[in-house]
Amino acid sequence: TILAFQHWRVFKERLEVFPVNIEILSRLKPKSEQKRILEKIKKGEIDIIIGTHRILQKDVQFRDLGLIIVDEEHRFGVLQKEHFKKKYPNVDILYLSATPIPRTLSMILSGIRQFSILETPPENRLPIQTFVLEYNPQIIQEGIRRELERGGQVYYVCNDISKLEKIREFLTQLVPEASYGIIHGQMDDEEITEIMNDFYNRKIDVLIATTIIESGIDVPNANTLFVENAEHMGLAQLYQLRGRIGRSDRQAYAYFLHAPIKKLSEESIKRLEALKEFSSLGSGLRLALRDLEIRGAGKILGKEQHGHIDSVGFYLYLQLLEEAIKELKAQEKEEKEKNCKIIHPFSISIPEDYITSSSDRIYYYQKLAHLKSLSELDDIKKEMEDIYGPIPESLNHLFLFSKIKFLAENMNIEKIEISKKLKLYYKDGKIKELSLPEGTTTKKLEFIYNFLKDLSNIR
Image (cartoon, rainbow, N blue to C red; front, side):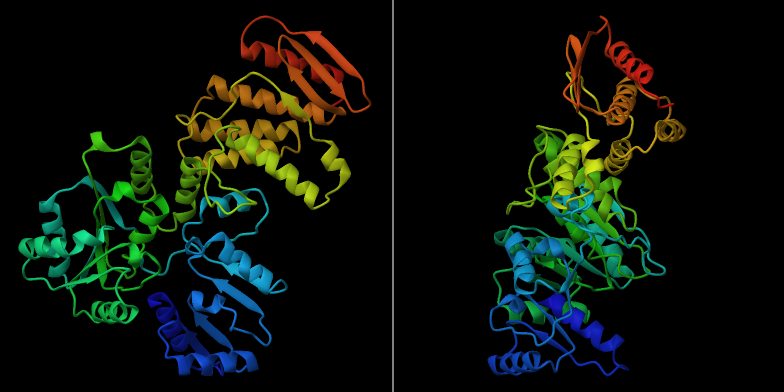
């Protein structure tokens, strides 16, 4: 509701000189006012309607809807998003999110959904300085006082409603000169709106809140954030919370406070490390890619928005998904027939300690999965050596594997089985079998590659 109001205010200011009728629809509007707006929507007298989930209700009927923009896409469930598509099948839909959920990101990477990236920040924006620390009252005290001294405001986030009043008492003892306010999801909408307006108008110095503030709230004067028990929150959620500050030309500071390291799970540590790593402006997509690796991709054809793909691995998962999409899109038979399945016992991947960035690893997996020539693979190898240093043995296995797949797909081979022997299954029904040499994975893969190279006319 607060975010919708902010959007409405921005739209009104920026389109003031144009003959555009803009309205806002939410539960907070009086019934009579809602009825008036619904009538105008039905008659086509409103050009832009900004609203909350209220717009999803059955009584909202558009005369000629042309575009739907869903802001904070990750806040909507799968069924809610599908509702738009069913109700308005011929209308363009634009989804906006700083941190796409794993399911959405997986759909983007596999080609189901088109996407664009806005990486250029507004003028004079500075990267937020991010600190991941064990809980420390002294740091909290110093951080609040430093912000107040420069005339700024502070967010203090704790997702346990029962603790908020105690936190206010504790912070009042630490920094008695500050004024405090509390908001959470169990309060009335009117009360939340009133407190947020007081905070926006600088009547409150420190706003103590749950994660209710994570969605798009814009208070340029608030540039310090404390998040208590950060280890219990999701990666995208933490990134969204950090996005509440640094919305002006002032340096902003985010403090993510956690329990002692010994008490943290491995997944919690990964999330907090990723948050610290991706602190540059416009790093939401890269952080979402890391979240995809940690949480899994979710079900493309189900309700779950995250899940696990460990059983097949991300590289194979993308390939399988791409094949299914090509079939659904009825792409050219020649391209479809070129796919060669390889059954093998080897562990083939890009090592995490060689390329630490998940988004960069996914980038190279995609390039290797779509080779146009063998020389392109040599270029990829040279690029990786230039950037990351000498190629490790396990990555050389992936390069050999990619070469074998490329040659096989251009020799009418539809399947290769690698065990103690090598079996080649041709599309015309022929099967070729030969023994593999004893030795290392490299030796076996090089043997297969050289054998296929001798059989083919490809150079």
